[in-house]
Length: 227
Image (cartoon, rainbow, N blue to C red; front, side, top):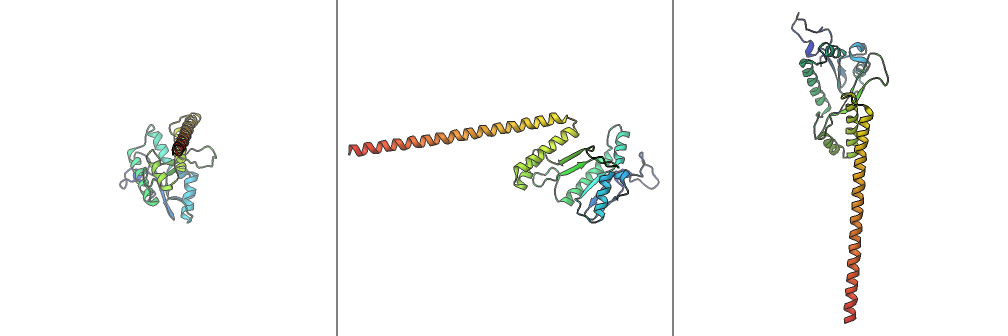
């Protein structure tokens, strides 16, 4: 995959509205990446490190890095991403789906990706992360079927909702957690109610069975007495 993206690809000698010396996206496939460890200014520490490890032959999952230049363009464009960059990101997502053998939003084999921000210098705890991007109400059912583990699937969905709500929608983390806890508590209450109802139904059946047995025993005694 080429280092320079669609946003920078212009005819020879033509200047882009934005300086085209930088790339917007770099990709990595097994054993080959566009970037390297010297590109921290453009790819951040994580992106350049992953590119270097990929080129060294280490088993790095496929992915792509949106360069720091996109952030500059975003602010130059009054907090908007140009359509050309959106199209380029879509192309990289399709290549990622092909490399991973999964599809974003699929109900059969959903592709889940982690989105991590980075900087030239390491800043532990300061960078935003969103895990399990690709899950929704339908895809989580596909993940449940594929893994045969509903608890894992819905816990993954919970993590995504919490992170997306806090990082993207800027909902205070405490409010997100409270809503999640409220939903979990509601589910636990419903489970307790179901358990109590099931227990009551079992007791009723047991009592009905015992009553029926006593009735049969009384009828049997009457028959033997009259005979």
